[in-house]
Length: 89
Image (cartoon, rainbow, N blue to C red):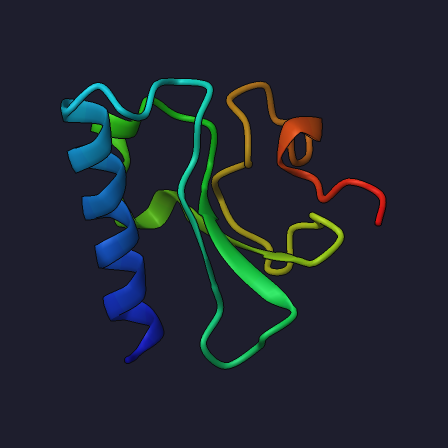
């Protein structure tokens, strides 16, 4: 599956789960990057019903934004929220 297809499916998952009341503003859906197993795709902090394809960002395993983008991970412009960072192992 191509990354563009996965991005569209991630958007659909956010919208469906948001519409069904399963996912709210504090939850998230993510998926591993098909070409870079140490990376994952995650929508920036936004209401799940309003997520669009450009809101899907790529992060490394430490939660760092991988590619520069015009959209920041959060509406405040800060880096990845602590709640999405992997915990200690």
